[in-house]
Image (cartoon, rainbow, N blue to C red; front, side):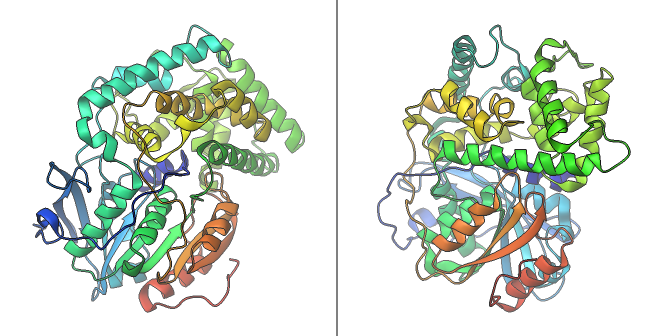
Amino acid sequence: MLAAATLVLSGCSFLAPIVTPPAASEPTDVNGYYSQSLRWDSCGTDLECATAKAPIDWDSPADGSIDLALVKHLATGVAQGSLLVNPGGPGGSGWDYVFYSGEYSATPAVVENFDVVGWDPRGVGQSTQVVCFTDPKQTDETLYGTYDSPYDTQGWIDELATVEQSFAAACEKNTGALLGNVDTASNAKDMDMLRAVLGDDKLNYLGYSYGTYFGTVYAELFPDKVGRFVLDGAVDPLISDFESLKFQMAGFDSAFRAYLADCLSGPDCFFQGTVDDAAAQARSALDNVDAAGFTNADGRMLDSATLATGILFNLYSESSWPSLTAMFTSLAAGDPGPTFQSADYYNSRNEDGTYQSNSFEVYVAATCVDGDFVNDPASTLDRIAEIDAAAPILGKYATYDDFAVLDTACTNWPVPRAALPTSFSADGAAPILVIGTTNDPATPYASAVSLAQQLSSGVLISYQGEGHTVYNQGVACIDTVVDDYFVNGTVPAADPMC
């Protein structure tokens, strides 16, 4: 469950950098980062943990360092090398993913042949953190708080802007120089340093969701260092922030319609009639919940934004669909508890009101330095209307705690955007497998098709089904192809269309 919750973080935002960086050069071992020796200590069955150092700013490596937390699951056989894993985000913890999954962090064939290494990217979790609000009640207000003005009004936007200005100021005060250096290019440079410290000539990498963007940028910056790369739930790096989120919301609508069709075919469905009828009933629930006065046991008021978050959480995997039905059934009976539970899982919130991680803070911070929200000339309200048209069931309501937050926060962000690549052919890189699921709600299938075409060595692997990401989830066709590639270097001659 913890591993699954970690993967959920990858469904938030997928960005489109447009700033041209200076030409990349072969890294030199300035300040000894590439030649550092890690101390690995046992931290569980077949697990070893260590801390690496990285510069705060790779362009000024003498100006201070940060810690990067690593955990390694030792190969059960003879290791061919290391396999670096990232579960997504931005803000997902690779350390948690490997530590809590252990031998299940990859398939048995891969675990036998590789030391699987998870790390917390800069700013995340057990690495040196992005810190914003220090009181979880302030984070609660940001994620669950209600407003004096109704959603979709300028009064609400003005209130939201005040909240986000306070949030941005807290991030700048409590994080310092790291805040401007949590971009994907800096993370890619960390990955190359970790490759060298782990003793690998080439980087072997498994990235899920936003982790595919890490891998794509790495391949563009270090094409000659690409080993065996698998990018599952691919992000298209050339789509603008807004278009990406609009695309994503349409994907969630599509997944929700698939859920409704499945629900209506069973005996215990909350909804009635056709799929279109059920979609209208769900939209009505979202329309009316703000005025319904649902109060959780801890005093939090349920609004349409939190209801949308609860719905989205249960759309990442087909296995969560029964929980979504139970959530609606409970809400109809006047109990918002299961809805808050789903939203809390999504936001990494504990029952006592504390937060398991700083994933939300990193999500906003990385989005603002990676993305182009600050340059978007359209108003937040106009963009919400566009998303509503593209995703007429869930889209508008899902924007209230996501797109609207990002659009206002990044407009007021205290550090500039990062320099990132603008094209992603990764000329000279070894073959890169790009996996797309045909009804993936968070990273729609067309993104995988596009990325595989952009990469000069991209190889598209398609899964015809539901859910966000698919490798190592029991789909034999996918697992067989990927395992043969990781273990033997076998590149499929054609898309297997699993």
